[in-house]
Image (cartoon, rainbow, N blue to C red):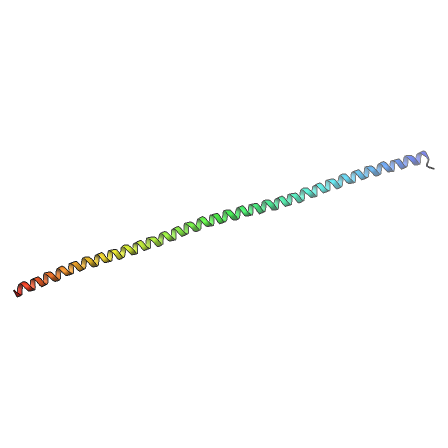
Length: 120
């Protein structure tokens, strides 16, 4: 049989056991909560990095697209300018040849006329 002292000692052990169990549960709970927060934090950080990465990629593609569009417009503009200069050059050359041809024809007619007049 237990003496009263033995019963009290048993009761103290039981209380200490309960207190220890509660403390362990509390510590484990805190450790688990911290671990979850840490994992969530890492997951959130990764998600943010991923989203920022996608946003940055989109921004880069957009900027590259704009740069490419500007470059294309610039190249097309230069090509168009060259084509216009070429067309104008050809038109000018043709006009000059036409004027020179007319001048030459007039000169020939004039010379032939003078020769004919002299012969007459």
